[in-house]
Image 1 (cartoon, helix red, strand yellow):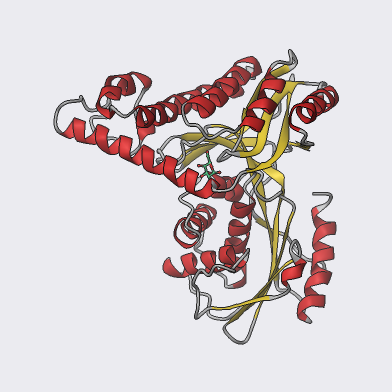
Image 2 (cartoon, rainbow, N blue to C red):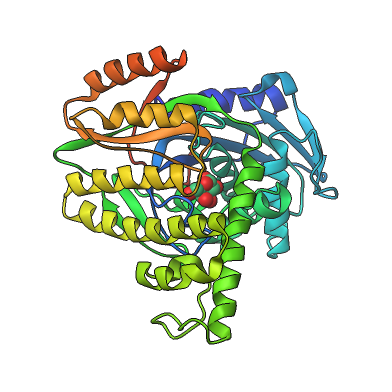
Length: 409
Ligand code: GLA
């Protein structure tokens, strides 16, 4: 985003133009890039994302009635979409309003009841379907907007993340974990966030690299059925966990070191998983569970490497992460493998991997400092030559999490 204040001033004018009144509150919530720890966040494991400077604005004003009027300055052809607080249900033609209604609904379920309708305008610059969490940014922005407008003072940022996840899970039907919403709400400028998704405890880790830089590349590939393939992976992990727990209850397997039945696959160490693998029998379940357990271990080691400025080790773990997502978890795709193979073959690339849910979207690349231009040129040209697609490159500037942004008087 060019300049947050300038963009806000422009949107403020748009709001007055569309609704004929001035806004009462405006907020911004960022998208994210995950550095490592993929598909661990619904297995109780660690993730290591950072918030981006790209994100979503939500501007609003309370109404006297119970109507919801929603306008996206990204999809202006839709015009003002209407809904009502008395009809917080998902419909086929909801488009972006599903996220808005979903968060208002989830907040209400948690006792944060909006007592009047609203006029809302949104705009964002996280590319849709790129794996950089445009939907989480929208959800978290709406959560913070209603907190601000309705003075829900006890609603915390982690709670906004949880409400947003609930909206995505139960309203939108996407069984995502907590990573995207949590980092959008809790990001810190210049830092990555190491989050234990089993306990929601976290630590911000400085991301000021001396000898390396991070570049995000959009493969510009979007596959359909991503949502159902994602939900399938989640079910497979749940099945694997249930089998392991059963074997532990039956005394066929020893309990993990904690002495308790695991609540998520990532509670198992690699050794515990290897001992348990036999009870899974099914090859696919075994591969999925193996990815979750080893990816979690890689994430812990990567965070450690990052705190010591060991970018070489970090890069190596990124490469291993991609291989595991490709071979064991099977959430990459041909174009993404081409993109990361091209990058990983360059001696100035420390590590490249897919980021986010998968099946297209973006890669995250750790490259030696000073090679940004060469990377864009060489990787861009080679990718286009092999796929016919033109990739997009984004800088990774670790930004602050969701916040209120003051409109101009
Ligand atoms: C999507 C989901 C996240 C997470 C990632 C994979 O982004 O929304 O919860 O599971 O995929 O790591």
